[in-house]
Every structure is written in structure tokens, then in C-alpha cells.
Amino acid sequence: MLHVNIMRDDRARVEEGLRKRNFSEDQLALVDRVIQLDDVRKATQTGLDEHLSKVNKYSKEIGALFKNGQKDKANVMRELVASEKDHIKMLEGRAKEVEVELKEALFLLPNIPHHSVAKGDGDDDNEVVQDWDGAWPTFEGFAAEPHWELASRYNLIDFKLGVKITGSGFPLFRGKGAQLERALINFFLDEARLAGYEEVAPPLLVNEDSATATGQLPDKEGQMYHTELDNLYLIPTAEVPVTNIFRDEIVDFDELPIKLTAYTPCFRREAGSYGADVKGLNRVHQFDKVEIVQFALPSTSYEILQEMVEHVKSLLLKLELPFRILRLCGGDLGFTSALTFDFEVYSAAQEKWLEVSSVSNFESFQSNRLKVRYRKGKEKPQLVHTLNGSALALARIVAAILENNQTAKGINIPEVLHKYTGFTEIS
RNA sequence: GGAGGAAUGGCAGAGCUGGUUUAAUGCACCGGUCUUGAAAACCGGCGUACGUUCACGCGUACCGGGGGUUCGAAUCCCUCUUCCUCCGCCA
Image (tube, rainbow, N blue to C red):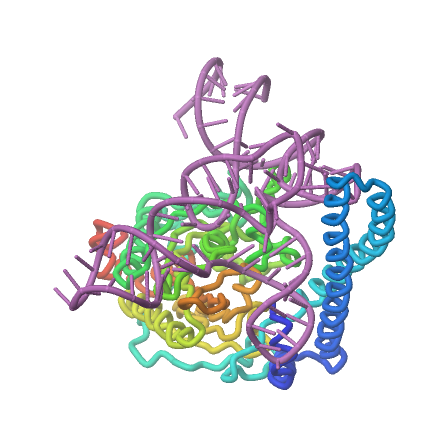
């Protein structure tokens, strides 16, 4: 959620940013509406406070009069209060209305893109900031197979059993497939820990407050699984519980940056997806992911974003997977993000780039709703910047490893994983 | 799931027979005096949000959340949530 003051102080930047996100001139009127509603809110507040102040004053006087036994005077004052009450009731109602309208309007405004973000319509306009210039997988004397074929041949993943037990999009990993999955999780967590992140194992279901604070609610409830009876949501990413750790907290300046990492399964309904995109592990309803999250000083958040990009890059290099990095354009940028780098891994048999990580700086957009602030000395609390990234999303990494490392006889496990898997190849 | 108790400022902890409490006191923290330095002692400060003001400041709200009674609620009533104790069930 944007702060209203950003719109008051730097209107031009806000409008320019919204244009990058392809806001029409009509939609830009929303900015005026927000400012106007905020003006009404302020005026209402001022009026309300005046009346409340009078009631407080009268009440004190009535108390004193009763003590002195001047009941007649006290009763006159009581009538004065009664007339104030009418005003108060009316203004309170108005204040509530305005606040709701203001919030609704603010929820429609996305984050302002970083100046480096280009205008664009969709993923075709994303800029490749780092392309792969290393070696590509080669397959001599046999035809490379997609991962779902390999998974079945070597008994690593059983998609049919997943369907039987739950439904489409819930793969069942087994044997060396399950072991590879676990090895990757441990590898990613160890790498994060070595990079200074504290590991947390958060709840996998969150309440409405948490889902709202990180922006999944109110509009994206269709993307989450919901438990009706207890009104809880299955997390679509560890970002939700982990970022909420600091909801409504004021942290000390010295504690920043706060670096957290978590492994969790992620649950996404992915309503409306179909076709070749959802084949195999390309798009599933449940997948494992290790997430890295940072709470940072505004002055250093872009350095930290770079540091996180480097971290993800190092993981892919160690796994020896061909990858490229994209800077998302305004049309593809997430609602809450100011700048996002996507990592895509090349999956050699499908001959496709698969998104395996998304690293973003949300600046104060998330922390404004979460109320995560820091305090330097005796200064007023300021909103922190929040950042997060996948490091990494498991299912598609498995797909890429299987496809890229296949030989005529089996699948080679990347060397860095050997100590985690306990085996060096699948055959 | 059943019965009872509780929830107060960073922490501890009073207030809870409704009205000088705009929440006592202690600890922690910050500044100062003293000291060669430190400790102790003493003095002062010490929440958040919104509104208002050029500013000092002032006003309003917040004692787990929401609602109610009252001229006035931390204090009384209703409701929800969480925690503790006991019982039941259970990995």
C-alpha cells in the first residue's frame, strides 16, 4: 500500500510510475481521488477531535460540580454533552466511511516502479540483463527426453498417484526423486545460512490478518487454498508467514538488515492454467521452495537487492544449470514490487526457459501495510524496506536437472549435491 | 471438548467498590551532576498513531480485539481471541 504522502510530495514520479504499468489517463484520476479522500479524512478528524475534547472538558466539570453538591448546574451541563454526542456520532460514522473508501482506493494503486524499470505490456518486454554465455547441455547419440518421461522411467515422480491421492498438480516424489528433492532443500538452506540468513520454520497456514498484511487479500484469495472451518489460508509462499513475523513491530536501527530464510511447501490454486505450461513439474499446486527475506534500511535496500541476486546466481552456478536474468517491465512487474529480477533456467529437452526465482524490492509498499518500522536513536520510527526472493523454487529445478543432466544411461547429479544425496547418478 | 482464572506502556507490576491517574512504582534505556575513569548515588527524560501549528506546543484515540451502559470506563455489561490451571482425548 502506497503512503498518501508519496502522492502529495512527488506526484510526478507517481504518475510516471503508473504509466509504466500502463495506467490510462482515466485510471490516473485515482491519485486525485486518494488525495481528495485524505483531505476529507483530515477535516473529519479535526472536527471529531474538537467535539470529543469538549465532552472531556464538560465531564471533568460535571465531576467537580457533583463533588461540590451543585447538582442543578451539573444537570445543565449534562444536556450540553448530549448535543455534542449527536455531532460525534455523525462524525464518527463519516470518519469510518471515509477511511474505508480511502483504503479501497489505495488498494487499487500498485507500487511505483524503480526508475530502471521499462514500460512494457507483458513478459515479451522484459529485459534480459544477463544471458547465458557458458556451456549448453549436449546429447550425443540419443534424443533428450522431457523430465516427465525421465521421472517415470527412473521411478522418481509419480504424477498419477498424486492425482489419485489428491488431484492434478500434486506430484508424488519417490525413491531417488524424493531424495533429490530433500538434498536440494538442505543445500539451499545451508547456502542461505552461510550467507548470514537465520533459518525459520514457520506455520504453513496463516490467518486473515497475515494474508492481508502481505497483500494476498483482499484481491488474490482465489489463488490460495482456504480452510473454511477455521478461516485459515495455506501459504502460497514462505514470504507470507516470514514477513509477518515483524508485523506491527518497531526494530532498532542496529538490528537491520534482518535476514531470514525458510523452507516451506507452497500451495497455489493456479486457477485458469492449462495446456503445455502445466505439464509435468512446470506448474503444480504444491511445490517446495526455500525463500530468503530481508528487512533493510531504505538507504541500502538496492545494494541488498543486488546481494540477493548474487546469492541466487551463485546457487545456479554451483548447480551448473544454464540460466538468464530478466528485469521485469512495468507490465509484468508484481503489484507490490518496485523492482524484480526473475531467474530462468534452461530446460534442455523442453527447450524452454523455466522461472525458478523472483527477487524483489518492495521498498516501503509492504511495510506500510505491515507497519514494520525501525527507529534510529530518538528519531521518529520510519518504515523499513522489505525484500524477498526464491533461493530456490524446487520443482522446476528438479525438472531442469533431470533434463539437462540426462545421458543415454541415466542422470548425473550435480557434484555440489553429492554429499546431500549420497549418490552421484540415477540409473 | 468441559470447568475455573487471567490479558495493563520494552519488561515486571499496582490500579479494577467508575471522576486530580493526561496509568503508580521498580527494572531496562537515554541525557546530566559527581568521579582520573567506571560503578553507586542524585536530577531529568523515556510509547504509538492521527489531527493541528512555521515552530515550542496543543488536541484526540489506544490498558488483548470488537460492541454497549454512563455526563465520564483500565475499572461495569456483552462478545470474540489468546494464555494459564484442572479434567477428557491424543501424535
